[in-house]
Length: 34
Image 1 (cartoon, rainbow, N blue to C red):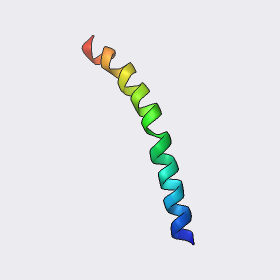
Image 2 (cartoon, one colour):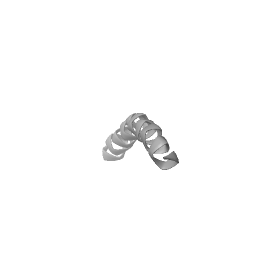
Image 3 (cartoon, rainbow, N blue to C red):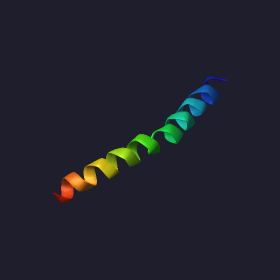
Image 4 (tube, rainbow, N blue to C red):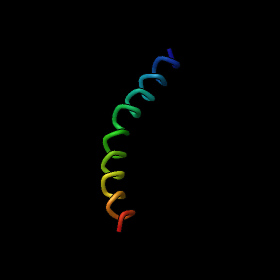
C-alpha cells in the first residue's frame, strides 16, 4: 500500500518536473550563449 503511494508521488513529480526543467533549460541556454 505504502509503495503504491510512494510510486504515485514519484510519478507525479516526474510528470510535473520536466515542465519547470524545460523552462529552466530554455532560460539558461541564452544566458550560456551570452
